Image 1 (cartoon, rainbow, N blue to C red):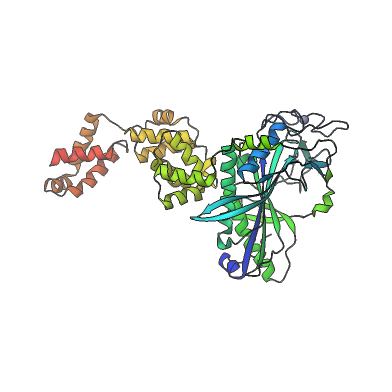
Image 2 (image 1 turned 60 degrees about the horizontal axis):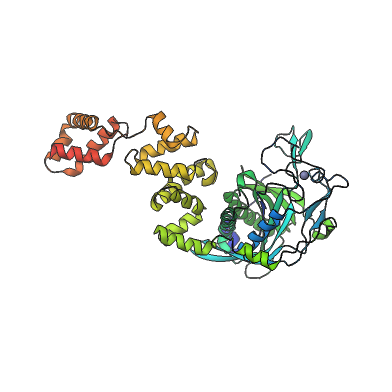
Length: 497
Ligand SMILES: [Zn+2]
């Protein structure tokens, strides 16, 4: 079903967007939230389960202390208050991948609340207010078999894997983000990117969007421009890349406007994001909180973190992101524009890691924002998901710095890295990419180019040094690009002037 859409500029002429982002972070604790089952990703289905996470009668949950610690550290990093006393709550609903028929979550007593994070977009700072960050458990996973789409519709049977049931999650919920205007999609993207970098810096999760260890739900509503009210919202679930966060906001803005322009009303519902087509489709009508019949979990003791413990954890926080960006910009000598582009591309952390692995700041920026960004864009993924690591990029740059590769050859090494051909050094050896440093071979190639192009050679002898470019080109072609162009130029001028 194709929806009518309103052009983005026309949406902005008539409406103000409001967003709300709900980000689920899967913690990297060794065991689950309420039992001792292991949490490794990718195990055989239903091998990491026990009576507690299968919800068998009489099984008693116990809170994972490490997960509480991670929750508090996330909250502190987001400038939240930490509750002195809070409880878990049962969120009651039926779903086959949730064997207890309730999810153990937190309701009106979240462990972290009232925080904020400053988000940089194109040199402008937006303060995103955090309403709460609470602890809960993940559900199992259903696999729908036999249909074309992998969804339940059209499937002939479904399988359930409970390995994920009970994995600790932190859900971070923003207050409505208003006032972003045309930058709303970029603010949403930048918020999730910065949050991901913060989670990685805290070391509390793998933070892999492609594996679902960070998942974003994007709420969006439109209101008449300048009205200051909030419209009816939709919630687009499980948006699994930064690029998709931006696209989903933009798409929903255009779709909402089309619905409103046609005189219909927006249905409060969840929607599915389709990565391949870049559209959302209707999911289910959104339940209100009262439908879940929340009540305090009777089988778990309340969580009451002492103030001393909270302060100890505060002392373990990484540098705050705003200060860190300012420090890195000064250390790297980036202009405001260079820094802005790096942050905007979601590449700050990966550039930092590449510099730490031995590349110069400008080289790290050049590769990730140029060559890697182009390839990621072609593949429709984030730069961090290309399969090329910061260590690889740094090694390639070291080879360039040592005169063993030029940029053209380096790009061929990246081809090899993307094709899974091994390390940069292995690829250089296997593909025979190293620059020829044998002066005899270079000199012979220069002599041949001079002999093949006597008129060009005469111009250079007459002092038209600019003509050397044609001979350099001929030599590079002869050497299949594996020569140092600056050295070739020197040799040509030595021979002809
Ligand atoms: Zn278990």
